[in-house]
Image (tube, rainbow over all chains, first blue to last red; front, side, top):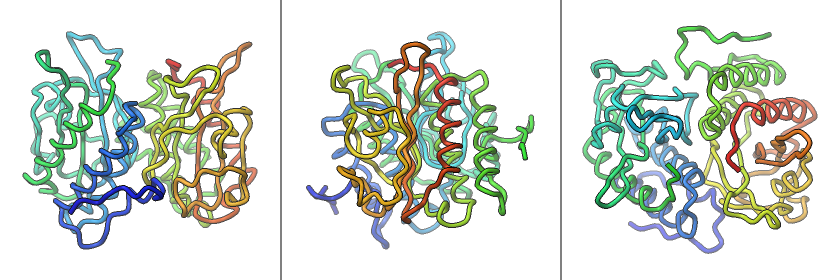
Length: 191
Length: 191
């Protein structure tokens, strides 16, 4: 099901997800709306801000465990960190206040950034070095945002936390990796 | 009542506002927590992301009409807009997807940016040129973020929408202007 942007719809309607959507349909709406919003707009702060809103409202419209998502947003490369010891820094999100900087390699976000591989963690308490920004978070998925052709580099990660264990599965991985690719190609990255 | 940051508290706790706070107490907590979070961290995207979260959760803890706030966040100077015809661009927020760019002078946000004066609008439908990102929004307050000494300039605005008319009053103005000053001085602005 593709949901088309209506010429006269106000922007907030993009965050309205119908009841009864499957997870695939909700993610498809996120992708379609993100694609529409990114059209002609490559500012990364603007686009990540709207993408975090789309994700948050998609999860809230789905049944458990997806509606138990308690944080959805982004970390990006900290421009003040050194290339030999890079860190992530907090970027737009929806949810409660979060940790500000995360060294590559530390915790779930740091692992995704260091390896450029999605981290799907069914139980964060069992993940070595997990950073507990919020003790309510029980599971997490982090998807790297990778740009570049020959010289690929991680510019950030999509990070989603859930207040239940096993909050994410392979469907989340597949669709969030599609979103990461759309974001990677749809923004100008200054770092 | 000043609420101190506890050394071991996880960051998410900063977004937890007790029941029964007055609006002044909730804003005081926002300011205290923002000051703590900004300490040693001047990245504007990081700081605005956390500030939007603090504001959102403060409003949700308050009685009506404050808890009917349906959007809280920021617009900043669009670095791609020309100095002679500046625009705002969407920055971190909590709430539904929002309009991406707003020319200085257009709508409530544009008026605040162009005049460097807070706009407290009790009924957005009566405001000339109001931009309806969300038809649910009925009242709005927009506070300019102004930096610089002799050569003062607007780098962005705090924007809060409410789903009820008369959602904001002079208390909101006073406290949001304090927050705008803290943000102006607490971040490095690249534009």
